[in-house]
Length: 254
Length: 239
Image (cartoon, rainbow over all chains, first blue to last red; front, side, top):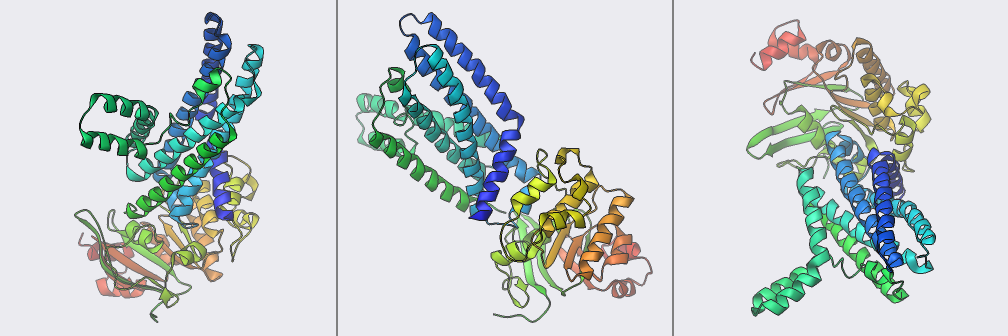
């Protein structure tokens, strides 16, 4: 456990010192400024636009940070031969767990920073309510799932481009999975295609189910049980993908 | 299962990448406390052999496990007793040497303090500087410091003097000799023949994935009937 903890810290320190981290913060501030402008031009909906656009800005910038940052870090270890050095200290299970947990920590740290800016904007716009932090938490769970997907594809593919695009594709699919299934249910009579899409919906991450933007835009907070179920869903999904990734990494080590 | 031959013993190790046979039925025995040099042309299989030794690659065919101190080598033993410096090693640039070594060190048995490792390789004065300011020679020495963190019994180095100037090469080999005098077994691959002749107790010659010779340099020279190691090597590989 100590080796894992130290490896997580090593990657965390590396990650927050990378230029991409600073770049994403500036990008977020730009997006936040744009959401402030949007709130001004949205007559009568200023508060809801500030909350919703701010959360979207956090999610977009956070997604860019974790996916690009993680992919760069993972493939950089391969090309620099550092992975060979690391694997003389600990197993591939520890390596993949350390990589995943370190970027989950980076995502958390980033969301804390971004959240502070967002909260200040909410206060300035008179849109603040104390349950707003739940929105940050839901984005954190979504980013954790995105990271575990990214880990899976990084272990599967030798090309970082494939890993990046696959992660983004599955993430986007996870956002629209429920809606797509609803459309298929209405338009299709075939039980086979219905069953197929239903299975696909459960395999894909149900990101729309753990998205709280539309609720929090109108200052409607979910209850604690829902938050707990979000946490368990994200935890189990990440754990499963990590185990699968570590196994693939061992099989693919040649 | 026990094998009494050698400190580290490999029997009929083979490794292919697709259709390319990188290693073919390698039989190798390395004695405790020796400096063993692996010679070969580019793409001969030196790096693949070293990667199999540190368990980074899994051999396709191996007659029994790799033996370490007469017992099958386990992954845990690799983690605890083997130090490794890969070829063309590039550590993270935005950390300092002290940070990198501190993060990698943990409370396992047989540990050397970070300060000791840095002093041994002559990087203690530069420990707080970011690695991106380091020269190639300093990076190689940092790699060696990482390999020494576990106070390993076996140090495996793939082209440790690649890209170094003469002073850097001498420094690394002088360091390796000091470590060998302290009882470390050293396995290294290099193309620089003068250092092989000066420092290695025994050598192995790999050509096209096959181990063509293992033994002392004197025996190798006698086999090829020449006084020059370089000439003997070129004769052995058919150039």
